[in-house]
Length: 249
Image (cartoon, one colour):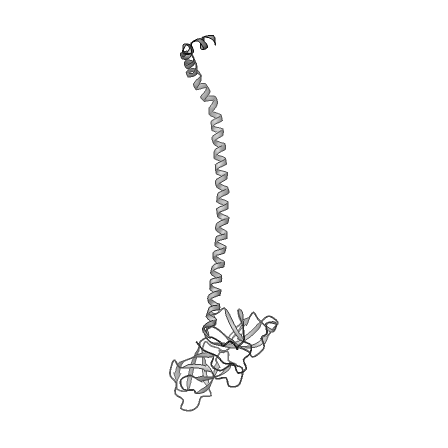
């Protein structure tokens, strides 16, 4: 120590020689600790990565749920907007209802809707899709109702041919199309003629779009309804169908 104080450089060579001699031993002793430290760091890093992956997976799952909800809302909004194709005057009251199920069979054509007597519906009220007349209510519950479609074999709707003002009856066939009955003699038709409700007989207001003439075979006049049950999710039920006025878009 005295020599180190008096002349620090005197023992420098000896210190360096000792360091060189013990360096491999120190490295050997240190190696397990470095390895353990590295393993702990790696384990910590893996745990952090795993936790981050779990977080990202949960976030992606939430995003997928939100995306599906957004798509469902978009479809629902489009379905509701389609109801506005037939524009009703403000004095005409109606209820909007979701379709619950298609209860059609080979012997009857009908739908169930999610509205009933509690929502102000009654038997006989007309039901519209976004394209035109769908049918009328024939059975009623507290919160549901059955709609008889205009294509049902028992359905009858008084109509008028738009271009000629000729009156007739649209009758269902239990198929995809209907046909015209009670036609005046020598009535001239052509494919594409538009049919509207006449308002006669009560039940259906005048001026509602029903369908078009799709085929003319002598006295057999086929009608293609505007309403397509395979493409609708919501309907409008007219709740004050006595002498209403409609404006058709």
